[in-house]
Length: 102
Image (cartoon, rainbow, N blue to C red; front, side):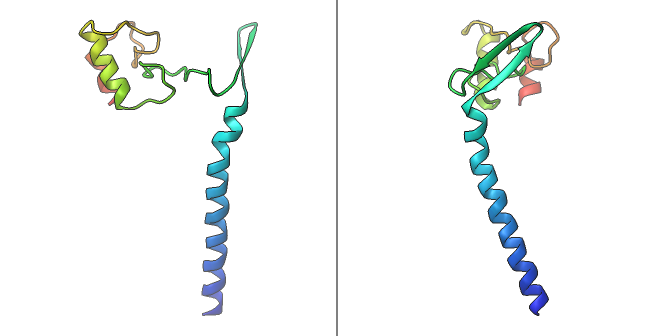
């Protein structure tokens, strides 16, 4: 019984440390990010950085259902096409990109 209590206590400590790490990680990552593109190095803070992943159609930093909706609006000519809207990277924005996102 004593061994089980020790194991549970260690597990609780590990979970607390893990959660603290998860809380601190975005703050650390948002401070400053450096990206090297060819011979050019750019520095961006968390406030002005756009997630450069295809599928981030509305360029808000997250890939979610808002990107799905934004892609649909691009297809219907209700929004301007963005560089990242081509989620499957086939050269055109269409329903296949919506499938890739959703």
